[in-house]
Amino acid sequence: MSNKKKNACRFCLKTLAIHPGISLHSFPSDTKIRKLLLTAYGIRGKDFKHNLKLCSLHFEENFFKSGTVRRSLKPGSIPTKLSSRTKSYFESGYLSLVFI
Image 1 (cartoon, helix red, strand yellow):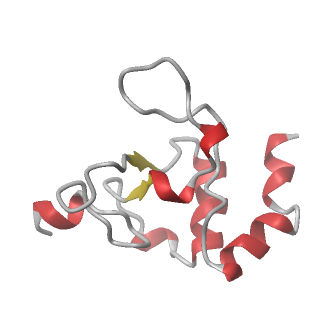
Image 2 (tube, one colour):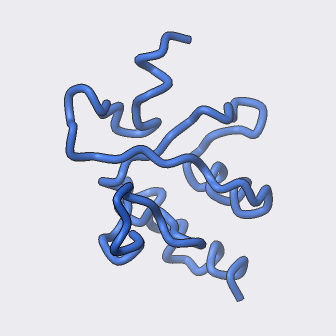
């Protein structure tokens, strides 16, 4: 895989080189939450690569930490600005069971 593909959002394919205002974020390290997110995105576990990224455009502004130099997400942040199929998965409450 080329370095360019590693530095792009898995869903919208935006890169830092072309869209310098975005930030890229890794999938959660918690395997339970990551598995639910991958299911919501339609990514099979065997297709998951640790270098897959999501860009900041898929997160609400309130999910970002304030007062930091580097743009980083708060723990437990989930991307809600996604396709209607994926968004309905989150809104169904299935993913919220993890955070109770």
